[in-house]
Length: 227
Image (cartoon, rainbow, N blue to C red; front, side, top):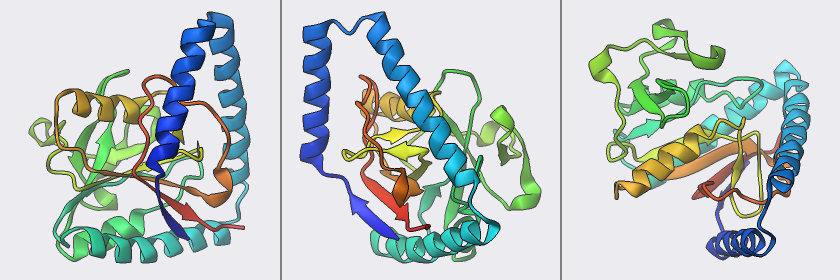
């Protein structure tokens, strides 16, 4: 596994290149559609590759990342800090063992809730597998009382986001819904303190794509060396 800080210069270069391209070429609907179709194809190929992994490979990368992320988190934040994770879906790297270990040592774990379509994510506390229910898009999410949902970023020390793919500048390719980008952009617009953002992916999922205007780069990539 590798924990890779994002190259800020590369982020700036890609943002500038995209801005110049959009300004000079007027990025019309046909161009945007081509870009969208390319990403859709890349998404399908990457999801197919990771869902083809054997149960043993999936368990190996889950154990590997849990072990090394625990060590990384111990160096970065207090052991009682609140971290936001995700529930694995469509062959994503399963970090439930990390959730359970972090809670066992006194930390707090939040999971994302799609409370409204095309809106920023909300977050609810994870209390274990028996407290989960099926939510939006068929992904398990915590059972919660309405007063437990949080939209604030200040309490979250580290936010982990699953990546279908990623590029050299640390932009993630997700499923196309834009929920993580929308959430981070909303926090940024409010002037809120942002958590450390960590993209979780297989090392082989690096691809080449141009970020969209509202895409948010990650701070760190956590890459599993699954063969």
